[in-house]
Length: 372
Image (cartoon, rainbow, N blue to C red; front, side):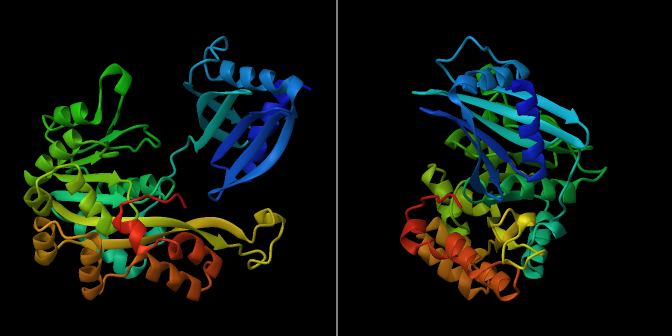
């Protein structure tokens, strides 16, 4: 077995099948290879045990990792550019009982920006979001579980705001796309550059718009809210299941309710749903790898804060009460948005059940996240 050739062919297959990740998983009988396509992992190959270590070591060399260190996790990166294939690859290793597991995140390294119009939003949600972005200050939160497409939405919003007269600074971990005209900062926790530390520095850089990749702790939340209250438009993300839970998550970080109510202008909750394959209309074909689906689009719940919501926040209202208010104001929930896509034939009822119908009120009130 030519290991270098095998790895080259593996990347080529992943590229052709539109995979976002490659998983190399050591097991007793060898190395299992899986590809994540449209959010789902499928087995692609098996490498015999006698070649497993060589495959892992080869990728570690390509990623500038220590091939002699197998006891602790390592992170690296590599670039693939051959033929029509152009990829940046982020590499993560993890020691297991059978050897090192490796996950490769595949990112197209050419500039590819999605606009607000391409996210999959309904007209009502898109107009509401555009209105929120036109504000001169405040905190706008994008929320959803891991893999819901939050980063893509954040980049689309930054591109929408990107003008010569606007100073935009983003704090990211990692920087996934380089956007001309925007100052992007790579967070380096190991070097001491945390979101909170970087955010303090950015506030001395005369910003109009600040993007904080994720609010993970009270310190970052306090600084972000302070910036929002002093005239900056602050965009950030949280890991919650819907918009109402995002509001209460900020309170759970021990931020004073009146500060949350004053700073928060809106919440965008989202999920990614699989689209019916256009070639076979969902009946399965080679073009969709026999799944019936090809590609994904977003489903969005866009919430604009009002005086009543601010009053409820100050009173520490439960997510269920916030949801009732949103429904009374005519804001469509994620379930309603996905159901409409089913009616239009864009996706299937099975996707509705998978993504939306299992999000019980009890789970959402507990603030639990569900990977979809």
